[in-house]
Image (cartoon, rainbow, N blue to C red; front, side):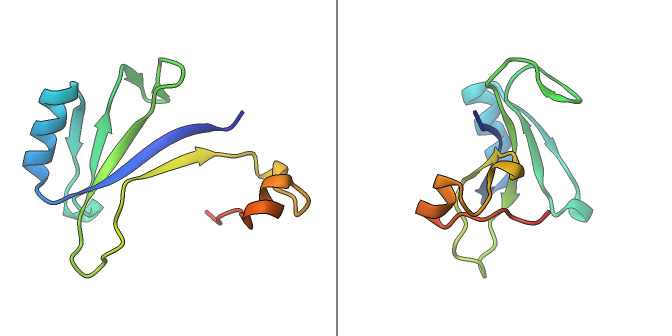
Length: 102
């Protein structure tokens, strides 16, 4: 089964967002600098460098909302074995899904 591996969400106020998720959910946030677009890495559960240690858990990140880009919504990343997405795969036939280049 393909799994959700990561989430991303926009923020408007970085400090307020970090304080909220820390106090409401116990997340740890690591604020990156301008050279990384002020991205914030969110660790939601016990993790190693390889990722969460609890099966099914995910970590994610938050990015500053950009006023010139109106279509900014929370998103999830799902790991899919690209060998399973042939043109004959039922999900591709019914949804028009296609692999995204890295």
